[in-house]
Image (cartoon, rainbow, N blue to C red):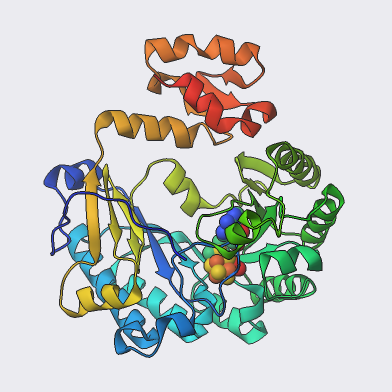
Length: 402
Ligand SMILES: C[S@@+](CC[C@H](N)C(=O)[O-])C[C@H]1O[C@@H](n2cnc3c(N)ncnc32)[C@H](O)[C@@H]1O
Ligand code: SF4
């Protein structure tokens, strides 16, 4: 079940932004996120804003065609509000973007191109469920302008995939990564999850080895989060499955970091490792507080300190755009201090570290204590987390901030 949206201030029907946000944005390029809210089945651990065909039913506003038309209409709205502005990265996420036909995804990318100047070196990514594509599909994406793909692998162990309720078989991932390379994607990424109930350190070691045998350019490894309202949460509450244990999660993380680094993939954000030059520029834009517009049901956007989020259900989303209204449910203007705190929270999770100038005098005074505890290091006026600090990142930021 997707989680609820936050509250906020009313968002204008014409999608317009405060003049001061546009002035701050100036000539800077932006990123575009396109949310595709469809999945063949819902994995038991996932609370993303995504719907199966059975959940959507046959109401006209929830169809794939209605979604495609509405997403195009929101792209037009974004281009009217932002003007002719370069787009540096485009990211199709979900849900399962690859449940759309390849020509539908390419069609959306072509709409982006018609409305915005796309940077000559633009990074264009789609997330992909390994089960939903074949060789020709991947070739069509590359031909249409996609250059990065991220496969949801999660694990190589059948019993772990079963607990996660994933549909693909482990052998599928080496096959699709091979096809992706042959098709000409310049960056191939794999998503992994660790700490699934019943997963041992040996299982995790085997999944990491299987992932590395596909020679990915990039790996995201996430600790399993037990989200309220998911089937997994119910199974744990009823005692049918054990809950993940924090100390075990730390062991999984340390093993991932050592194994991935030994294979030439360096960490550049807490949960992300890449070969040099293959960092995900789209996600870096989020973490650096840059501006992006999120298209689609439930998508979030941020432009120069103004944040807004769309209505969640595909039917309400298409209704708003059919009636010529912005699909934003609400928005908020971030105060300078919340922007600063957010910057500390996100930038400190990057290997490049946090600019110490962002900290107040009192906060800077706490750095030496954190360094003495082996949690942070100071280099060239930047603060970076040590491996121990990465394991306790949230607590480190809490201890640092006023
Ligand atoms: C939108 S999905 C990726 C594309 C596609 N839907 C798939 O699952 O293959 C994004 C990623 O979020 C991660 N994820 C989703 N729910 C999670 C949870 N509860 N805990 C940890 N990671 C999660 C998974 O690794 C997943 O691959
Ligand atoms: S396929 Fe991806 S988005 Fe869909 S339910 Fe599973 S994890 Fe969530």
